[in-house]
Image (tube, rainbow, N blue to C red):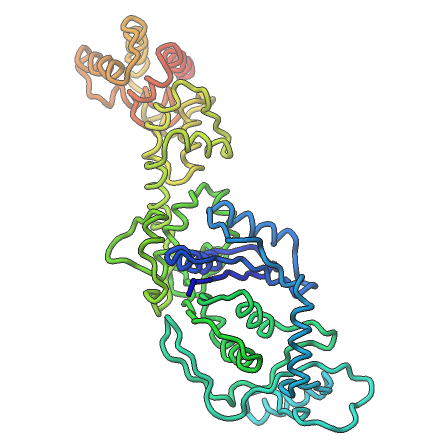
Amino acid sequence: MSVVTRFAPSPTGYLHIGGLRTALFSWLTAKHNDGTFLLRIEDTDMARNSEEAKDAILKAFEWVGMECDGEVIYQSKRFDVYKKYIKQLLKEGKAYRCYMSKEELAALREEQMANKERTRYDGRYRDFTGTPPAGVDPVIRIKAPQKGTISFVDGVKGEMNIAATEVDDFVIARADGAPTYNFVVAIDDALMGCTEVIRGDDHLYNTPKQIVVYNALGLKQPNFYHVAMINNEQGKKLSKRDGATDVMEYKTMGYLPEALLNFLVRLGWSHGDQEIFSVEEMIALFDPNDINKSSSNYNLDKLLWLNAHYIKEASDEKLIGLLKDFGVDLKGNEKASMLLNATKERGKTLVELAEQIKLITTAPTQYDEKSAKKAFKGEAKEILSTFADMLALAQPTTKEAFHAVMEKIVEEKEIGFGKIGMPLRVSLMGSMTGSGLDEIMAILGVSETIKRIEKAIANM
């Protein structure tokens, strides 16, 4: 039987990092088994739906390269399907109209709380045959089993047994006819042929309700996998400040999609001690039965380390394309490869990489006060002036040739390397930052290097 998985976000907010991890686990399960990965937008809550959020979810999937198979499915276009099954359950006596008013329900809950009982519907209209009370639009409730156990095997947590008394006759259609979450999810998963349902363990106690729906309609239930949450570095619930933000924010912050996916796959799954996985390796190795039972901790340092790795491994052509979004256009620049080689080791994100490139390509308009005070003292002016003259005479073009001129002035003036290195770096970059001086000068060329040195001398 072909494996079919799905990811089913609600367009009431942006796709966040936990949602993307769940989607990744589902996508990998499908791809590993040459199966089908479906994307279903659960947009039945018309009051809270957002077109902007829906578009952001689709953009996020496009950015990370996790394409779904077939068209995106929208629950809002399937109301006729749900109504058909509600009618069927009513006709078969497996669901009923409940005329309990909001006031009655509130009073029942208050009484149960006062008695320290679990709040639940008491089934008062389950077998009602009398005259319906006037002025109440009924909801539709499904008849849940009143005894026994609702059991299923969870691929992550193992065997789950829930007493039937824990599940009341829950609402499957509101008074306005709108179907409810657990009802439509069960129907859609069954009709779409989902064989594996991978989702966060905040849905764990929705599963018994969905099983009630499967059984009432005679539908085949899928295999369930409930994945533990991602915590922050302190082991508490991940907040927006910790990284639980819109996935597209990671693009804005300069992360590569392959780094983000690699990071997420390791939050709750592992393969030996391996840390770096290509997408192809993830697909080949991933098995949802190997997902960890315990929660994972978000680690920003690990994400930055992975991102730095993927930046270093990326081709020049790829980085040139990506850097355009960060204000750096190297297309057609004959020094593009030199610039990238000089800066790739120093940029953990594309934002940092762009900043490092701009530091080289943009002449400083001012000098860091602390750096200048340390570098521009003693014989600095004379050493820089002599060095500029030596460059003009030697006309070096390679990194090695520029380095040779630096070695020459050190030897001739019998000075430490820092005596030329510090004032030269501040002259070229404006502070004590940046790549190797010989690399920087080879990128700038003799003319621009001398120009920056002379400007620094004039400002001393």
